[in-house]
Amino acid sequence: MKIAIYGRQFNNTVLPHVQQIFNILAEQNIETLVHDKYNHFISGKIFFPKKFQIYRNYQDLMSSDVDVMISLGGDGTLLDTVTLIRDSNIPVIGINFGRLGFLASINKDDISSAINSLIKKEYTLDKRVQLCIESELNLFGNENFALNDVTIHKRDTSAMMIVHAYLNGDFLNSYWADGLIVATPTGSTAYSLSCGGPIMFPGSGNMVVTPISPHNLNVRPIVLSDTNVLSFEIEGRSSKYLLTCDSRTEVIDTSIKVRVKKADFGINLIRLNNENYLSTLRNKLLWGIDTRNY
Image (tube, rainbow, N blue to C red; front, top):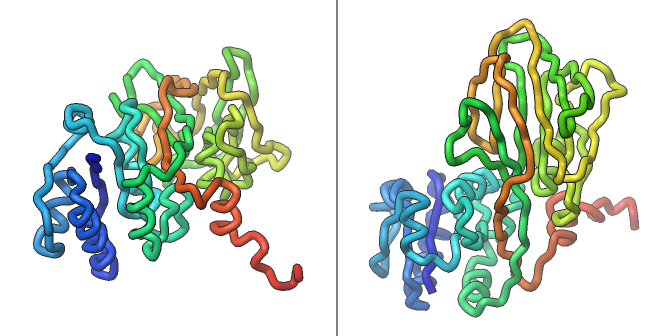
């Protein structure tokens, strides 16, 4: 088995858990690849009981026949990991060193059992849809896809913007707001949720359009089939606006038209046999914790 590891910088409290991961992989004689930047960060802080290979990009992963990708960090780290995996279909699992961890769902205390389950292949693949951005400028290059959401947002100092939205070429609505979120079911528990959007189940075949601080309170989130294509035209006092694709951001001129649709490829999230989406919702959103219900 060949496992690739990706991570970002962390504080020293995480060091024992990272060391544990490398120890287990060495004990199980697992061939390991570590991202170049992550290797530079942990060198001198972690003892490596076994030699490993270095990878730098998508091409390195494709040529290495990686079986599983492990993301070490929070949900933001896993979103970065997705840009390395792209359309390779390499399954990914996230070990949560962050806070909430909807995507990186493995707790630090469960590292040993999680890796053993990976080695024994005691898991299922949770296929997640992604969104794709299209424009005349080829925005975001080869990373023009989003697992969570695509957002259109005014710049910090600008006034409210007007987002004219079209559904398959037909006029949908003009949103007077600070911005607009187009989220996948995966992203429905992220930024969209904090803006009043609904929770959508993976595999539901939907996407949600959620306004950010709309001027008109009767403008509500709308759930659409992910077979639709959304296009946007921007109007406002400022000539620039922000376009984000998960954690990546571009400053765009208002004259640029943008289209958002379902991407041609998705991502395989690893779910261990003792977890599912319902248990993740209950644990992360603390459903049933209020003792007044009992």
